[in-house]
Length: 314
Image (cartoon, rainbow, N blue to C red; front, top):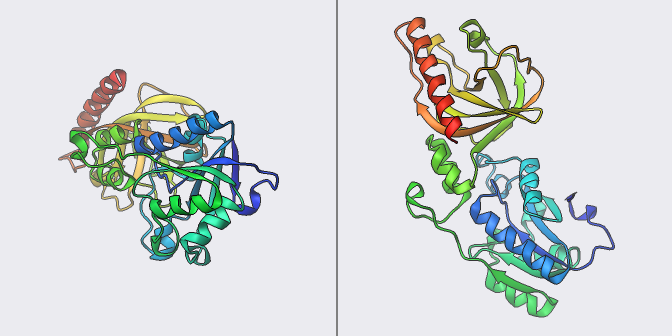
């Protein structure tokens, strides 16, 4: 899969293509439906498929300081899109100048002049251009002038966990923030993931007999609510069942919020400096301060037992 950053990276001899545009944070099941349809139609038309997305999130430029928590960094989104069969991903730097493009100018500069769109696949709520003034009706209207078609994919609705609301990154972020990683996983179609480099922490886990990988998460990462979770720790391609702790470590009066993963039944791991991914499968319990360290150890042993069982089932 080709990856481009900015319009100037697109090959000059690029021909017609099927395009879909959006932030696509998390590449959840609703996104997968749209992207999958774009890939399907591209193959039918014997042209490549292209996903156009933005960095940073448009809200950060339009309303500085409002950057939403991210469900997946761009490299992870690209991996997920590649798994769906996408031929190219274009990341457009979203600048103040770019935000001023009218819907018509956006269509000409991106879809017509550079990507030579033959078909554009979007959801019904797609908005684009200055002040998000462009809608799918206008996109289709302009297609009559610039020789491309528009296909609109209906929204996917959540089950009980999401309250019957349409699949969205906003809803997924809310579920993650509430610690409902199972509900988030329903929308994503996989466990929610955070990732980063394993760094040295206070090393209390090692002292207590439960050495953890302290993962320094990427900026703006959507981190679940404080608590203990079952999930997996993946390092260098190896996926290990894990008991995951999110919080400030109230037992020892901690102040810094961390994500730490204990690789169940693994000893002698040296993960410092390595990139790690932590996948959240299920909530186990909230964070709290115990009456003693011994009581904490009993709780941690029970946590590991539950996490072992949950990951075996999951």
